[in-house]
Image (cartoon, rainbow, N blue to C red):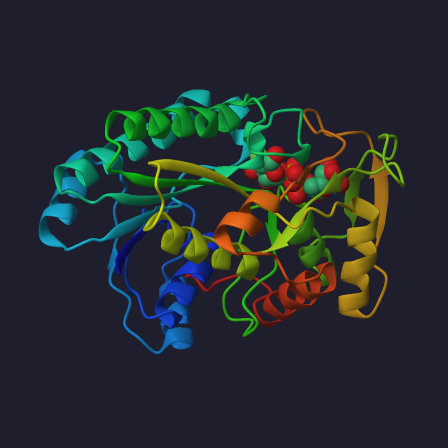
Length: 338
Ligand code: UFG
């Protein structure tokens, strides 16, 4: 297939592009580069050995989106592009609603106009709100912050569009906590500024960019009192996208929803210990108060994806840490600016 990947220069997008090319698909990327460095493109090309066509614009630009679809044959779209920082979304709700909703509307409008029927959409466990333990796909969706609401709303919009036009084939993929990097160590997660998420923060402590990890609370009703999450290796997650893309081609109904997680929760302190094993020394941390908005436990019930996609996450937490550490050591400041 000829697959358009929006946000293909981003963390999950870049790993998925590599797997799509390896599987024999032709890939084109659209990315605004607001949250990604252009140098990732050369890294992807280094792994695949192929030129990657990239269109640098924001999907909220309806005219450019329309022109792209008018000028390129596209068989399917994987839509990663979007703003994704929970805290920032609380401070800037209008930007989050505008960007995330308008980009999806612009993209889907162009798809329908040019008869592109297949879409794989990046959703999140955040659509389970405060109810993320052992989540199955039929659970009620709601959110606790504007970022989360944009995912709930985009899912609803896509379900409504699928109901109105049953010839569409749409996969809504709900990710749990993606971590890790490509085994080459040449592409990985490159947060701008102070990392919000646990594993990128730990990686920066390990490489000497940060003094110590702040563990947000040790008084949760969990095994060791720290928050538990379902960390999934980004390579397993990328493989889930390929499985979904292939599956929707033979699906009977227009819209399907799949959790992509391992089903196994890991606590913050367990992750600190695992990352220390990868690095070969214990990493410094201190316990601080809970982070507002955090929940105690989040993990998937991944059985629907296993049954319907024939997909399962295979990489361990130690694999995730070893691969993240390889990437961070080789790129202590992330991707180069030029
Ligand atoms: N944590 C720390 N210290 C840090 C960062 C995180 O102790 O510096 C803890 C958190 O309190 C939590 C766990 O590590 O218990 C994981 O936190 P992350 O920030 O890595 O991930 P979250 O589960 O909070 O958030 C992720 C995505 C969101 C998404 C959410 C789904 O980053 O985009 O999962 O519910 F919305």
